[in-house]
Amino acid sequence: MTTLTKVQPAPVIDEIARLLTEHYVFPEIAEQLTGVLRRRLAEGAYDVDGAEELARLVTADLQSVNNDQHLRLKHHADPVPPKQMEATLASMRRDFDTSLGGAPRVELLDGGIAVVELAPMLFPLDWAAEPLSAALTLASRAQALIVDLRGNRGGDPDTVAFICSYLLDERTHLNTMYWRDGERSEQSWSLPHVPGARFGGSKPLYVLSSDSTFSAAEELAYDLQQLGRAVVVGEPTRGGAHPCKGWTVHPHLEATVPTGRAINPVSGTNWEGTGVRPDVPCAAAESLDRAHALALARLAGDDRPSPSADRSVKSR
Image (cartoon, rainbow, N blue to C red; front, side, top):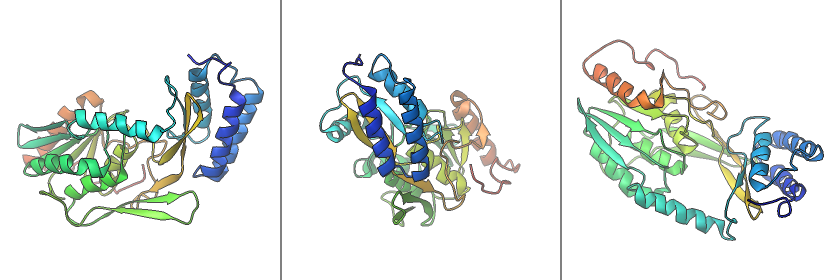
């Protein structure tokens, strides 16, 4: 464990305060947080046994004002390599190769209902387009589809748009990202054409969620839910809607600071801090069976309203 002789808290806090002031998407919150960190430093709250404990305490304080789950001080047991991005990509690539490109499961259940599991993350689109296209095309002939995001920790927004393109009939505005400088915004739309076959925008669609579903995986669930396209079944998700960047502030410590915020064109807000709230709440372990039963009932002609049929699309 890194000791206090190797990590003095004051320089770490000074650097985090600078990063917040220069980069955090909410300047007014950044000012509040720098005040919290400096006060806690002066009180001796960060005089602890090592870098791991410091990271835990600082993260709690960083999230104390607006519960921004992407705002963190991350501890690394091994020193952060000088070329952190290359190391991160190498680790991501290993996960990609061992998960069939992020689609480790495609299964046909009773009643012609397909399950496509997307895990452990939504990989960069230039990697993932081929395996995702194969998985979604295979599932396109199903009578209903269950997309399992329970073990997905996030990833690439472009991959979110790519997946949505298989689940909609028309090009659709999904999300808008606003950046710290206030002068730039980026809209995300589903694609007019996709490789392979679409599942389409009319057959029953269910999305499974858990308290581990995070970031871009939450966007996928949220976008489809707000469009009225999918019924979300399971647990509230973690609640991280802000894209972030990482900076090394000590050989064992990395500060992640959100530099933008997502705004859904239907709800006018996002899932930050609240998570995506399921239409059909249940334990994550039960959600597949629950979604399967809902799909079977829907296909059997049960005309009772689905959980989303009689609700107006609303902020979550």
